[in-house]
Amino acid sequence: EVQLVESGGGLVQAGGSLRLSCAFSGLTSDVDAIGWFRQAPGEEREGLSCISPINGATLYHNSVKGRFTISIDNAKNTVYLQMNSLKPDDTAVYYCTNGCPGDSDLDYWGQGTQVIVSS
Image (cartoon, rainbow, N blue to C red; front, side, top):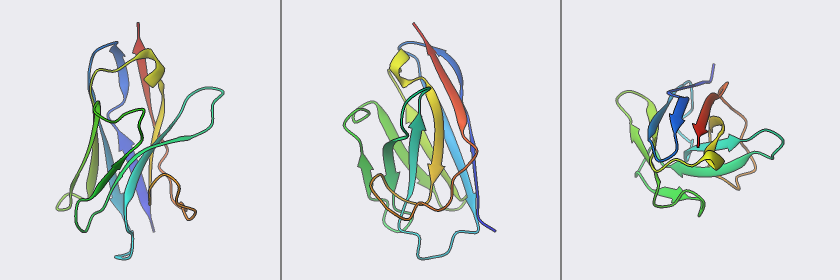
C-alpha cells in the first residue's frame, strides 16, 4: 500500500520559515521523483518542486525558486520542503505526490498539510 503523509504545516508570519515533511512508503523502485504541490482556496493545484530519490536531481517552479529548497533522506523515506521568506500568497494546503509538476501519472497523494502565512 502506497502512503504519503505530510506534516509540518502551521501558522507563520510573513518573512518566516517552515519545513514540511513527506513520509513515503510502498512506492516501487521505478518512482522517478517525489514532488510538492499546493492548492490555495479557489485556485487550481500548483506544482512547486520535485526531487529524484535516485540521484537527488531537483526541479523548482519559478514562483518558489530561491525561497524553497527540496531535499530527501532516503534512510528515513522522507522528503522535505524548506520554505523561507514566506509570503501571504504562499498560504495553501501543501501536498506531496509521486512525481514532478507536469507529470501525467500522479496517482498517489497525501492528505495535505495547511500553511497559513499572516501579513
